[in-house]
Image 1 (cartoon, rainbow, N blue to C red):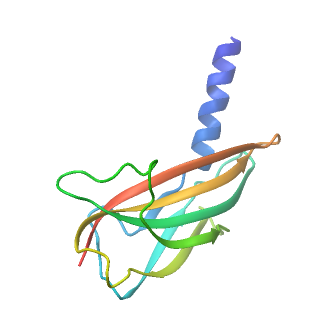
Image 2 (image 1 turned 90 degrees about the horizontal axis):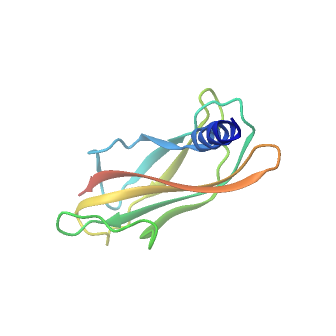
Amino acid sequence: MKFFAVLTSLVAVATAQSVTFTTPRSGGTLSRGSPTTITIQRPTTSTTVQSVSIVLSLDACTGSTCPNPSSALGTILFAGPFNPTGSPPSQSFNVTIPATFPSGEAEILATHFSLTGTGPTASTEIDGEIIFVR
């Protein structure tokens, strides 16, 4: 019974903090040198979640694979506070893809740091979408 309670608690914590891209969507296209808006959403939850910060980055894919985001984040587009509002909570960021970034397939990443629960517990997660840069 304790195992089930612990498992349920871990699933609730993981789900509570999961961020996702609202824009751009997977397969979308971003232009180098032009301002673009990235919107990150966090689900509404009954668990206490304090979003601390977020890093938005872009990493070029080579061949048929994209780099592992746990080893390097690539080009940093934004690093700072994450204060989502609304329902479901979200925040938009205005960024510019550097003109020198290579054209082609790339992975856009959101690395989110949060405090979860009454303890609280520190948590870091990475969400990514494959996009195209022109």
